[in-house]
Length: 586
Image (cartoon, rainbow, N blue to C red; front, side, top):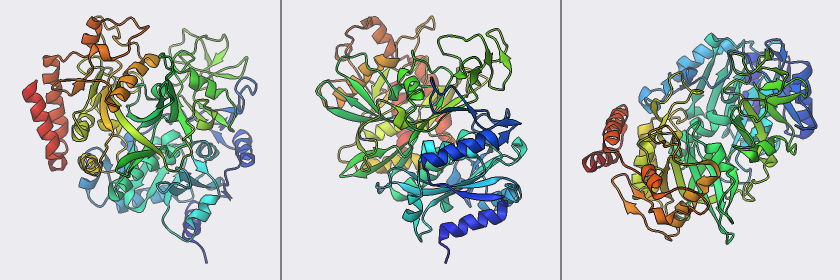
């Protein structure tokens, strides 16, 4: 008798009609075979799925070129499917489940004709953790199969773990014909199911990434009493060897990956990395614990360098875990090495991300602005020893923040957990050139979750408030902004490794070692309580970094009012009360 997961795979096989079905087991030998298939058999836009790079300087590394119309997440084609629109909320595109399936079934019918179908069993989280989830993704892309081995714990033992149960998360993906008119990513949270067709790129196709780990998992967390968050997890070790763990929600282009691989400028302090993107958090013994359910980094390449993130650059060359992938970067044709904007030197003979000769005076960039690397966490020399602890790590503080040139101070501590939810709910970040055509427009992005919350964010805010009721020792919540500028547009804060000084103040606040001054926004540091040793930052600049400009805040409050109003009756009354109190005090 077939097990539920075997029945599902057979149903997909009958629907998609592949020429061959390959059950993946997750071994390195298998990964070599999949890469070979990508080099010799599969093509995208008449270009091999994988091209070997310089194995001496970038060991175990390969280049992948996606279709020119398939280079980023497609939020406008991403849907959350419930019977009613209110559950999806204004933060999601919505479609009824039956309507979504009716639309996609014709696109999946015979879509794998002549192609291989890969069945990928994987765990989100450590297999021994009670908060991990067994999953199966089906795809017709060797790139996806190889990437999922890097990004998740792909292993055949997952099938044993599922056994005769139908309690597993399912993802069906096909690159289809890569026509944007026939490209959809549909989530069915009540069925723990994702359907994706028409894209072979990143989060559209690696369904463990945002689809399962955030959109589906956030819904499960809402129903089961835990949190799935778009957060990095780091451990900060002090000179005495004590480690405090922090979760950090920072939107794209706000320094999240750089923060989680920070090289401290303060003697005796070290940052350990547990994850740069996803945190699953739950309550145990009245405290918050967290795991990173992933095992890889899917990072933006342009701007990553030995200056901005030396630890990541070393990980990309480490060659410990097979393989490392570079997507839509340029290539130095003399050395067969990947290249992108932000690297220190510009080689003479480059081809761009579409294979065309490129020179510095070319009108278009060499690497696509959203070019990516996919690399295992096990390549990172500062990977936390607790990474594979199935019990997770206790979270002492939660950081939220965005990129703001004005208005938001360097660091603000919330008055309590509930006030911290208010800080997260009103969070905004300025658009960047890579993200939007218009630069510097403030986009509300609560807890950096606006594109990823799988249900109504009004309910999401209430869920955060409810979590706080069960915590005897809640993590302190802090709002940070590394990007404030002066009247001439110069950054007031040096950022990067110097951010350890703010992190030290946060840990000191957790341990009750320093005081803070109360303001309408929250609790702020005294100049004397931040360690500025070796850093030329005077009191005048510090006051600019922590200034509350009333005119700017009046405008900010009006924008927050408008954003909150989009959630109607679903927005918790407490958040309106916080906003009213802030308005009165400003």
